[in-house]
Amino acid sequence: MTAGRSLKPCIFCIEKINYVDYKNLGVLRFFISRYGKIIPRYYTGVCLRHQKRVTRAIKRAREMAILPFVR
Image (cartoon, rainbow, N blue to C red; front, side, top):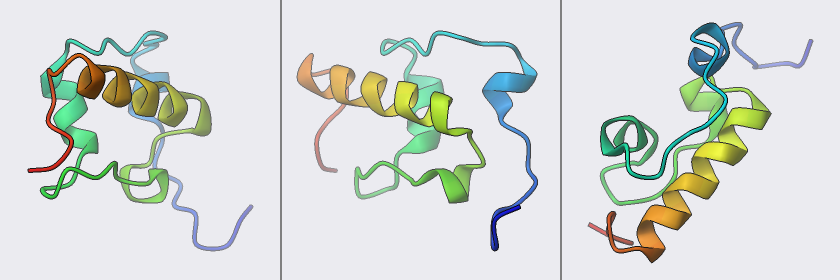
């Protein structure tokens, strides 16, 4: 066990969600700070696999002008 790591389970693993859609802004806004930065996984409690998928979806949504780069 790593020091400081919470035992909060990953919400994507619990719901058995494998694909994080870049068009689902309701989910993506949960992982973005009010300044537009991606929140690290030790704050959100998401596992590494899903954090990478969320990051990729956020970056894809930014490139397609669905999400702003900064607020």
